[in-house]
Amino acid sequence: MKTLIGTALEPALYWLKQGEVVAIPTETVYGLAAHGFNETAIAKVFAVKQRPRFNPLIYHVATIEQLYQCVAAVSEDVKSLINAFWPGPLTLVLPAKQTIPLIARAGLPTVAVRMPKHPLTLELIQRLEAPVVAPSANPFGYLSPTTAQHVYKMLQGKIPYILDGDTTHFGVESTIIDCSQKPFRLLRPGAIEKETLERHLGYSLLWETNQIKAPGMLKRHYAPHTPLIITKEPETFIQKYQGKVAIIDFHQRWHNLKDVVAYYKDLSPQGDLLQAAQNLFVTLHEIETKKLQAILTDWLPNHGLGIAINDKLRRAAH
Ligand code: AMP
Ligand code: MG
Image (cartoon, rainbow, N blue to C red):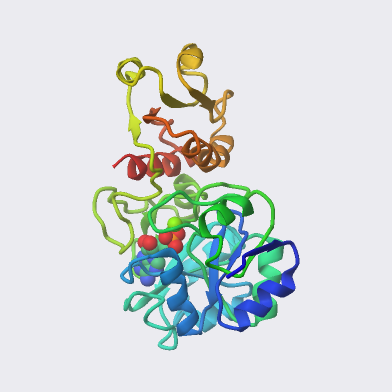
């Protein structure tokens, strides 16, 4: 299959209607989309990604009407979150409508839904007149794509079209919260800060980092082929690997080591967490091309977007 990249919406719309999967831009990372009510198309998403069937997908809607095609009930609390954060990188897990294909929700009674904030993709979903399911457009367990070129590199030949909507804004996935029971639980930290949600809700979200509560919250994920090591002592590893390592720095902590390693990138020399999130996957993709022995990094400050970035680092290093 020949894979085309373009900014035109029509080919994406055409292929989705044909039951094919296409890559779409969002404000978080690129997604691999299929028509949300076409089971054969949804099965192709799992096949293209080699994603295990127990890992449910996120429905992407363009309108509130489309939300009601997916979920059975929306409480006042949930409406208030929607008003505050949609369109945006907040995914809500809610009781599913019976009509949602079981394959998309891994047999669960709930479904994950969000409204992405990307003009091209919103228009696409609106014109399709149906929600799309869309996991990140990468082989399962590997780095998420933040540009159309990343998608092309990873999925070329496997999908007919990549809708190019520029570099993604956040560079990390959506925040997922389970609203199917109270108090709400954080399932995956992401682009919307945990603290922001808690301020809005007026209580702390339950969050169990080390338990796999949701299918798919696997310990190893987002992982580059080059081993990623989280350390306070980069010098030890630089010696061990004779400098054939990459350093991913933040806020110039290891600036003095810049010249003794094969690759050095500071995600944000000024210590800005959004900038760091935007640079994370781009940097990892770039390091992958260099065939080094290891990637050395340390935790970022564990607040705001730093929580989401640290979560990715933890899974990438596992
Ligand atoms: P992604 O891997 O970015 O496609 O995000 C999908 C993730 O959303 C899955 O790995 C699950 O962790 C979560 N998810 C989707 N649907 C549900 C659901 N019904 N219940 C709990 N978590 C879900
Ligand atoms: Mg993913």
